Image (cartoon, helix red, strand yellow):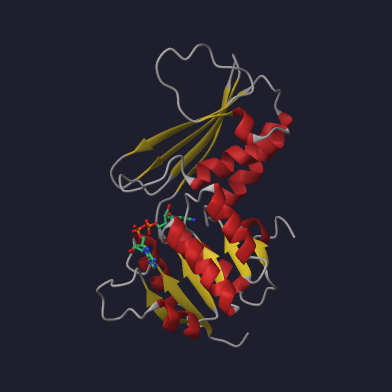
Length: 256
Ligand code: NAD
């Protein structure tokens, strides 16, 4: 792929879309080929989706689950460009549509583009494998008041990592809501709790608890550019890849 790598930003008017555009513009080896948002979005610097796809080697998309799924299908139908998806909150039907699109083009999707969180996932899996099964596992996350999905994509990935380490299926042991007379905590459950307040960018903790001790592994996002930088690194990595479904663990070399 020739430099500069041409990047289009989907969801360009959003919090993450703006952060991604700023990271791309600050890098001389990248060109901000186009910015687009939902049809009819009022901003003279935006182009429509068709023009953006024609101009780009890679699209970086932080929008909404339905918008990202439809975009992946459009890119697959026209044979590219490659797509880096940061959107979270997909349902099973949308995930199946993304998987079908990835048979025809390169798609990289991650619920969290930070190096630290991807490191945390490896540590959580390791701890869940090593600690006895009677250590309770709880995932906590906090985000800003405008976040629309819960638990966060990252919290669910951390739950998946813990379940993998334990050799169980997350869907069978996850406890996503507690309210009222719940009874004692069943052994083996992986619990989730959520806080929404103010401008919190992203806090995640995984607690391993026995009667005698608590081990807490945690991550705090300090600046949204963290995710934008990770997504741009992912775009560079993805640009020359064959069709397939990739994630941040591929980019970081944690899996091949
Ligand atoms: P936001 O609401 O600020 O921005 C979303 C943007 O997408 C809006 O400008 C909206 O108009 C646009 N959009 C909606 N439909 C569209 C369409 N059809 N085509 C193009 N654009 C469209 O949200 P945000 O805080 O930027 O977050 C966006 C997504 O990214 C959320 O799902 C969030 O959970 C996720 N996120 C992921 C990471 C990560 O590291 N993976 C980090 C932060 C946020």
